Image 1 (cartoon, rainbow, N blue to C red):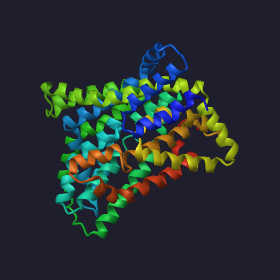
Image 2 (image 1 turned 135 degrees about the vertical axis):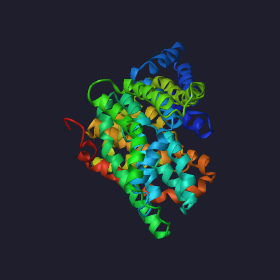
Image 3 (image 1 turned 30 degrees about the vertical axis):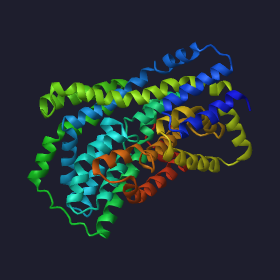
Image 4 (image 1 turned 90 degrees about the vertical axis):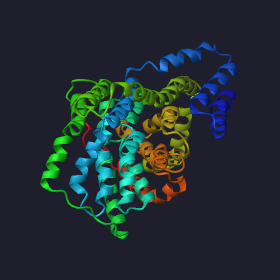
Length: 425
């Protein structure tokens, strides 16, 4: 094993274990390899620029900004009101409201943490007041956030599309059925929990209430149609759709709902910039890391080794899913996709997995990681809103995790499950 390979693997793992931020850890090992291999240090600067120049990358900060704007503009409350008048009177109805509202909000923001924050801030306290166990309330908001990366448009699919050089539009479509399946599974969990714990039902909405909720929520419900209709109608690209989503949210927040002020916009933009900077930094420095990985043939070598030791595709995919789940529980999901992307693509190619189907498998894994203990992003959002500990929410979220793993199984072994709406597949 060469010194470069040792630094790129063991060196990076060591830095991450010590708690060094991913972007800094990646940049450090790249610089060490350049020094050891006597490569011009300007290589890192060149790759930083190259890694951050993709037009598709613009969709990430724009969708994150859209999520912030939708929440600040009051559209998330409108979505919750629309969902509430439909199902609040059923067993587990208020928890179901969280799932249904998250389903629509996901089609606006594309982000799991943003979805959990928008829905959880309103419904975790409401569910606790209505008789739900507070840990369950937080857990259902966290798990509903997982729909964010699966329901198009999705930041995770944008990142994977860039890494794997695949059609982002087709990848979006591959997430629809897994996302809807997880939503249905979560609705069942809500029903079972409420029935088992004898949670009181909410009063049924009257027809005037329903009409009023949908009349007031029409602009919130129209937003996903504008974004997705524009993408698949060929009017604009996914990146342009993110910009349209931001403009739509600003217009509705300022002039229709009037819950957003011009003076609040700088703070809203700053929150989105802070989150986006972390993601973009990881992607930018990973460009150099990926070139060195390819140069040392680590990904190809591992794929060849796996192919020579595992003859069955289903076994290889099972092993990949297990490894991915364990990694996602302790490692940043975006970092996994970007850093391990070349290796994952090599494995998928070696076993003849359709690249769009493979993208659905990867992003479904990533989505589960957002809610998986101990470091899923959405868990920390749920902790901040509910005031509960990681242990308390983690104990309550396992039924939802099992639902997600079952959907991952279907996504992995039934290609048509994920590719149902993808043209030409």
